[in-house]
Each structure stands twice: as C-alpha cells, then as structure tokens.
Amino acid sequence: MTHHHTGRTARGGFRFPSGRRRLLAAASAAVLTPALLTACGSGSTTTTTADGLTQVTVGGGGSIFDTPLQVADAQGFFKKQGLKMKFVTLTAATGPSALQSGSVDFFDSSPTGFVTSLSKNLPQIAVSADGLGNPLGLVVSKKFAAAHDLTAKSSAEKVAKALSGSTGGASSENTKAEAGIFLKKYGVDPDKKVKWVSLPSPAADKAAINSGQIDWFLTSEPIPLQIQDAGDGIVVADPFKVPQWAAEQAGYGQLVVTQKSYASAHPDIVKKFVTAVQQATAYMSTHLEDSNDKSVLQAAQKALKGVPDDVVQGSLQQVEWPADGSMDAAGWQKTMAFLDSLGTLPDGAKVTADNWTNKYLP
Image 1 (cartoon, rainbow, N blue to C red):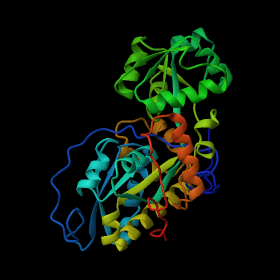
Image 2 (cartoon, rainbow, N blue to C red):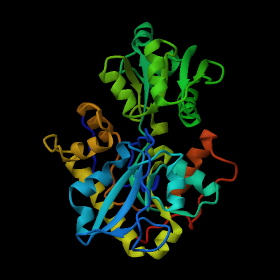
Image 3 (cartoon, rainbow, N blue to C red):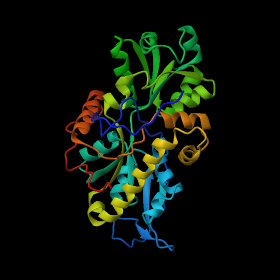
Image 4 (cartoon, helix red, strand yellow):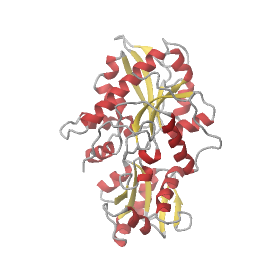
C-alpha cells in the first residue's frame, strides 16, 4: 500500500499535512564521549574540523525520526552548508539534560519531551519541525486475533469492541492514554473494560505479547510492524484507521530543539543546520514516491539498525516529511490540547511564542 507525500500543509499542527503521523522515539541509551574542545564558545561541542567544516553534535532517539538528519548527511546538505554532523543516540530522558549541559548542540525532540523540558524551566527553543504525525501501531497476538476474527483490515470499531474485556500492555502513560482515546471513541471504557499490565518498555510489551501475558499493546513504529513481520502478531489499528492519533487532529510532530543561549551565540550555525534539515525532509517527501529509489531507506537504516527493509519502509510511509519546517501558534494550540487530553503533562506546562521560532528557517 502506497501513501503519497505531497508536502501539502494544513493549519492543523506545526503546519501539519492531513492524515499523517509520527513515530514516537523507540530510543536507546548511549554513552556520550567527552565534550570536544570548542572553537565557538563554552557550553557547546561545536568545533572546526581539519577539512574546514563546522562540526555540530546532534542527539536523537535512534528512531525513524532521525532519518532527516541521516539524509542531510548522506545527500551532502550539511556539507553544502559548511557543516559536519556528529550524531549521538539519546533517550527522551537523557536528551534534554545533554542539551542543557552542552554535550549536544541540537536535539531531535518530541513535543511531549520539549514541553516537559519547558515545564522544568529549561531554556530551550524549537527552531524547526522535521516530521509530522503520530504513527502508532496497535498490535494484537495471533491467538487473540483468531478468537475475535480480527485482521489488519478490520474496522476501527470492530477492533475497539473486541478489546473490551481484554488484557492490554502499557509501557508508558502516553501510549496508555492514546489507547484510551481510541477505545472511548467506540464506547469502551479503558479503565473498566481493560485489564492493564504495566511493563517497563516497548521491548517488554513485545515479550509479553509473545508469552501470552497480554493480548495487545500500543506503541510507536517500528515495533508493531516488526512483530507482524515476524509472524507473532497483527497490527489492527494505526493512524490511517484512527484519525484521533493522526497529525490533522492531534497536531503532533517532531522538533529540532536547541538551547536559547546556543541560538543567540551561533545564529548562523542554527540557520545552516535547519536549512540542511529542511532540504532533507523536502528530499524525502519526493524521493519516497519512487519505489526504485533506496536512498531514504538506506539513510533510515542508520537509525534503525537490524530492522527489516519492509518494516523500515512501512514506518517511513507513516510520517509526513515536510517541505517546510515552519510552525505556527494555531498548531501549537492544537498540539497542547492533544497533550492535555492525555493527562500526562506536568501541571502548568505551556508553550509560548518565546519557546519556538521560524526565524532561522530559509
């Protein structure tokens, strides 16, 4: 099944095209090397390489959302701007602190992580949107699917009704709440009609569905598609089927974030960096249309090592890669409304015009 990426925008999110979604980071921890001696000021790893390029250190979650960074590197967009990227894998928990300490200059963040950082008074600023949507996959065990006559083509209503009386796995409050949004839409009370098993990670969700401890769980791709590809379960709901998760309704996406002090000290570098990333997402929005063009797939595989090609490709198709990385106030209002509906943000968390800007975009 092919999903087209036209670069069209709608005033529903950061500038979210309709019907697309994002992958929440399936992040893994990494040990940062000591900060480089800086040539551009303290609290930064930015330095000049032997070939005259300005090296910047960038943190990401090791997920499909890191693909624009890898495409910008592979296609020479960073080099054209006089930059060289050093990529380090971080988690949603470690990314903000790495940015705060100056261990990384930029961090590819989810809105949830960014807003949470703001609630802790961390002086961060979003300078570009580099992925649009909220692509989640709800995967059920093969046994449960057979017992309830569920297939990948089953309607959203049939899936929701079948989950009444089931045992669901939850490795985060966000995904549990997002499952609840889906269930409530079809009259299934997630608190009364689902027995929840708390698990420490999406990997634990996967093990629990394989062992029969749970009937189903919801998480970001590529894990659900990986389970389906391995023949251990069936993905019965995603944002193509559940519009409440999609960017058009949820107003969700991925952000390039930096420290306010870094942006003030190095506006030229920030502008070059987001220009290269925007060129990469524009490249992706057109080159993914060509089934014979493997350049984006190969770049994504650097972020998702060991994931089967078909799963990576399917995950790429579930994100809208914008030709324009700009944000707007209406989009942020929609995003905050979605986050508030999940009930997982700290009290008083908010985003103001001081927390995001389009001024560094080309």
